[in-house]
Length: 84
Image (cartoon, rainbow, N blue to C red; front, side):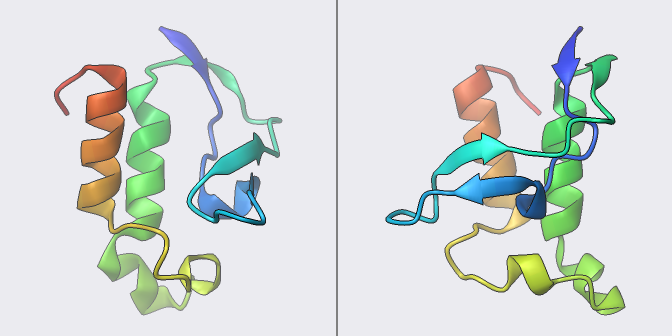
């Protein structure tokens, strides 16, 4: 159990102006709670999954600098030292 954001997605972040692959702040914490830290990683991957774009909810994901869901999951897995 850890603190989880509860709505972790790209449009709740502020990215570095010089390197859009770096998150410098996370916004919108009113849904934060205690829970499984994998839930934030999973939600980020859901928003990045190709089928999510079928509902035209991809405006925040327009940049090719944001990796696909499988790459996000792999990066999280390495950083957290956990298998997903």
